[in-house]
Image 1 (cartoon, rainbow, N blue to C red):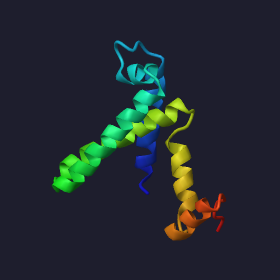
Image 2: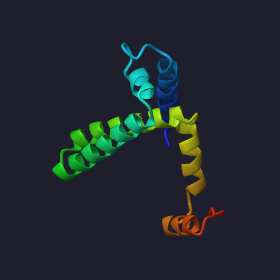
Image 3: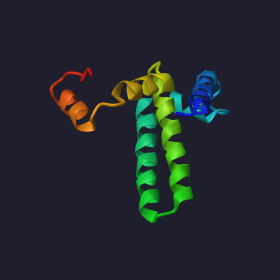
Image 4: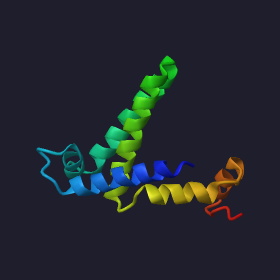
Length: 115
């Protein structure tokens, strides 16, 4: 992974955290968080649907933009739970080299696959 990618995600997470306590009338993040988790979850659902539709359209730029929206809103949800991109990256690193089929099977049995 390019080192700049993790740094970019951390900068965005820091900005989300900074705006979390801002005036909801002046900050989209503050407004979204002040409206409660269901609002954030609904927004993620909308962005996921828009990402799927963009993929189906074949428009690569549209797909990238919608994916960026989806990632951003997922980061807002993570922040709401005291988590950040480092937590997700750590989980992806943990899964690296593990068969997706094995990892999914381990989750079905209530455990985690430890390589």
